[in-house]
View 1: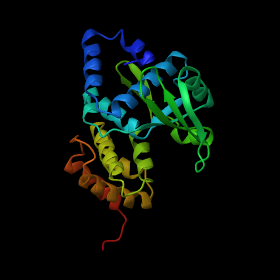
View 2: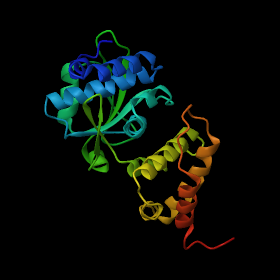
View 3: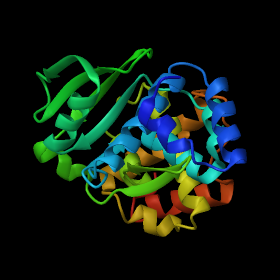
Length: 247
C-alpha cells in the first residue's frame, strides 16, 4: 500500500498491533480497503498538520469507526463497505487535502449548499471520492467523538447523530436501516438507556425509527451479526410508542 501518512503513523505500533494492521488491510475487500485507507491516511495527515479539530467524518465510515471501536478492527473484514467518504470541515481542511493529494475533481454540488465533491488520488492507489461539507453544513456535525484506530485519532459524529441522519435517507435503501440497528447496538454496549434515546427524537422521527428498526432486521447488508438485544429493542419500542394512541 502507498498511504504515506497512514504508514508513517503505524510504523511505531507495537509488533503485535502492527501485524494486526497488516493482516486486516491485506484481507479487506474493496471498496473498504481503499476508502478506509484514505480515511485513516487523511486523519493521520490532519493530525500532523494540527487540523484534527477542524473536521468530522459521518456516513458509512463513521458507522464503521464506531463498530471497530466496540468490536475491534477485525470487524472491518465483515462490514458492508462504502464507496466514498462523507466529511464536514473547514476550508482550511479542504485546502490542506488539496495541497498534499492529487485532486482530479473538485466541484460544487448543484443541489446542496456548502457541499463539494472532491476526488483524491494517492500514489499507486485507486481514486477516492469525498463529499465535503463546509460553511453552514459544518455546524450539523459539531461536537464529534474521537475513536482511535491503529493509534490514529479519527473524529466521527456520535451514534445518535448517525441515526438521526439515517432517518432522512430513502427507506427503500435498507443498508441505512441496518446501520441504524448497528448504532443502536453500539449504544446498548455503552449502557445508553432506551429512554434517553427516545427523548432525542421528535414524534415523527420516533415513528420513522420504529419502522427502520424493523426494516433493518429484514436487510442483509453485510455479514456482521451485531444488533441490539431483544430486551433492549423492546424497551426502546415501548418508549418510542409512549403517548401514541393504541390502534
